[in-house]
Length: 428
Image 1 (cartoon, rainbow, N blue to C red):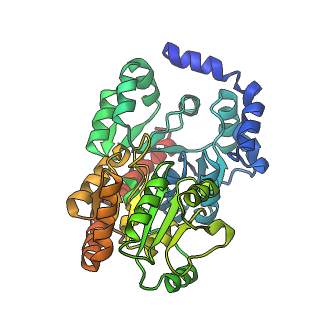
Image 2: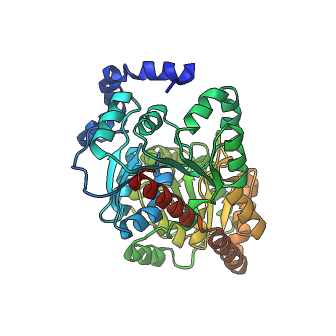
């Protein structure tokens, strides 16, 4: 197949990637972004044999994407199919080690070099690829297509900025999208943008993240934390980025005049930043406590940094209000509010939520979420919620009902996958 010049140049450049891969991986390892024991997986080498039977290969870039795939993984396993999940980050691998359903396998995605992808495909021989959201790695897609393995982009989304950039390279993006047998878009707007870029067989299926089960928690830990907080007001700033922790510190201090025993919990998007956030909090005059050190909520006012992995379900259940980060400082884009809404937590967010516009729009309209544009607005909104238990209950109910009503994407995805698997078995 003849590819557009940019893809041909990319292919030529990445043929040399194996020469640079050891240096790249050592650098990532030194920054805590790789697992020493699993570096071979980045080169396309597997740690275990391919299981017998039909194999569904699912790929999610990071934590959010891989978690959204769990209801599908469970359904494929229940149907007697084998499942391989690949992800690209160390945090996602650590989390999926706890969350991956029994019987499913995880491997790090290979670096996007033709040789690594061929080695990977030679070993696993998948019957279908289901790639989540916006994964458009050229060699992954082209090598999969070359073997006539059906590929479906599921829960597909594309930002306006990305779509505008791709419009400048129409033949390149059309060639990449042509590698997919179908594209199942999160929203009508996403479907329109993919079609405008030349995609065929685009279906609007809804957001798979609505179908993910409520985040798990340790009941004993919840009981212990609930006992420590008692009747004190508790709010959570989740998935925060640099700049947003500082805003949370400001909000904490501002609200101490109303609640001297306030509990503020920070769950940073990247837990490894816990010590950095604690140092900043101490500079702000706060006595910061770190969960990673085994510290717990104390009596009196508490600024608690939940710098651990896989415990958001615990803190969503504990808090009376949740601010979702990535929405008020920096480049923004927002993070997924569905997990908080499923657990009945009123959601507060900034205006920078372009990655989840439809979700936040539905929650805002229903009264399950509240937009704030400044630190002062954040304080006023949090204070209103913490003062009014009836408002919290009403907002929590609206949030939970909204995400429940918007579910159903997994059924469309399962039907589409079954269609292509049947065609492959029948040689069609």
